[in-house]
Length: 106
Image (spheres, rainbow, N blue to C red):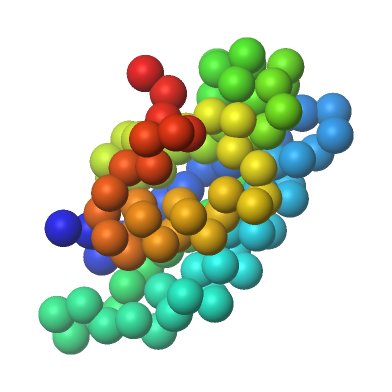
């Protein structure tokens, strides 16, 4: 079951600033898929996305084709995330409570 609260931190240490694009795409998808207005047990769902500095997984971020991000409260770490992956992360992880295995870092 998915949490009523999620906080996503997206690494923004890449030279091409893909982290900013990923964060923007996630925010757009969250609004599009109704997470801002969705009520869970009478309480409003809270989902925050923000950029941050290094998450210390540079080969999946700074040196890779996408950005790294971590989702709390689960602590799930994703790598090589591109803006086109935002819809799947929101739908699968945030709404359905399932890990997006193809992006998961060990």
